[in-house]
Image 1 (cartoon, rainbow, N blue to C red):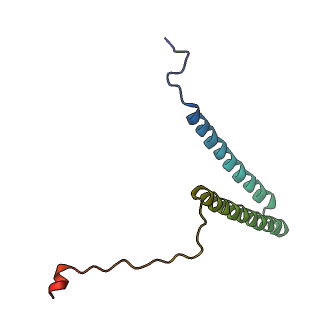
Image 2 (image 1 turned 30 degrees about the vertical axis):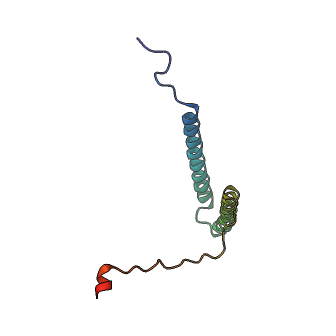
Image 3 (image 1 turned 45 degrees about the horizontal axis):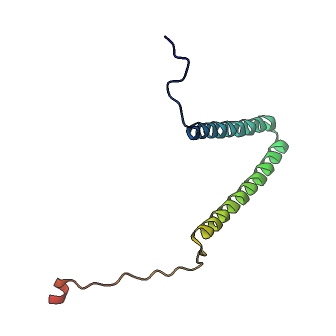
Length: 106
């Protein structure tokens, strides 16, 4: 006899995580699809390829700006969490030297 209700009930956290992964995979696929469409439109026409290249360079700079902003946000979040500032200069001292019994004899 077939069961109408699911055998396993997932926690909403698991379901949400699966939905986020599926959405992320769809977005990645859409981005690649759009890139290939642009390459197809450009074909081997020099002027169109120049437009595409300049646009891709612009997008690269925008992505680098987003990465630098998110990195500074991480540092700010850690400083807030720990309640202290990240030092600009760190001095590392050498470990203390130990004298072994054999060195004492010799």
